Length: 402
Image (cartoon, rainbow, N blue to C red):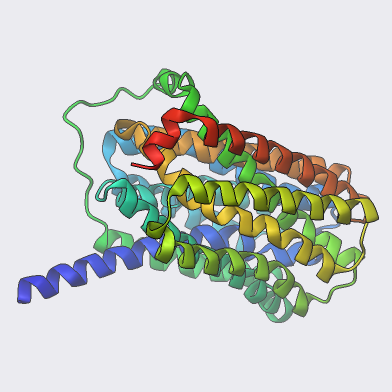
């Protein structure tokens, strides 16, 4: 009995630590976003330079990912996660004590480099231990937890900024980073390494890029990811600067999107075993089309109502729930022996594209939703196209329905 209690405790603390990693990864992007207008005024920045604090964070994240994936496959998950968390903490300290924009810029870059390890390796700890169907359940639950944190983060960030200014959000990230570091040291086990030591080389990524089904999966997941980050990155300037939404209310507009995704993921995780996955992928394709029509209409009419804009984006968030929880675990397990590398390419590519798209959105931003909507609509079209080809790909559907 004592052994069973100890095992249950160990598993519980392991899952709690993974949840903390996901919380940190989720809040790292969103917690400080409500600070954008204050940062812009404090450092006398243009919209593009404010957006650069997200873009440079993404760039650091992606640069780190390609090393993290290979290093995790070679040396195990735990030591790489610990190194990443230490870098994240250093970056948070720089942001907190910044006396100039350049120091904040460098700090955000280090935060991005550091957060990559816990962000992508946390789920791999589960993928190393459970079969695909179980992974999909855990993916849904972890998506629920992480996106709940993403939903809450802008609300918390708004009030932290209101009372403690932009530095307060970096204090919160620093504290959460330290807690996650300690929990990782105590409760994350060492990964059992393969006897064959993979040589660290970017050439090892080439076989992954030559797999057409894997590239199709990745393309869909990447395109599915980008519209949300364009919306998240541009909404502070659009809502607070131009649509006159107050700082205290801004977080609710942004948070509702992540909260809907979180609740939908948990619900889907509980019922997904009852339905054929191919059929529910068809359902998500129809919701994608509906979301494109609604966003295109709001773009064409150039709505200035923040509530209508937010509600128009909700169908796209709902349409992501099914494919993200089915296709991401499938993608990571398509070549099981190189999960770290697959995760690195997937995460790195979508963040690079998100960073570039944010810069384009910031450059062409005119104080309205119009140009933002055009860019988002273009990516949703690519999501629909790649989603259709996945459903028609017999090799992928065979694996999905096993």
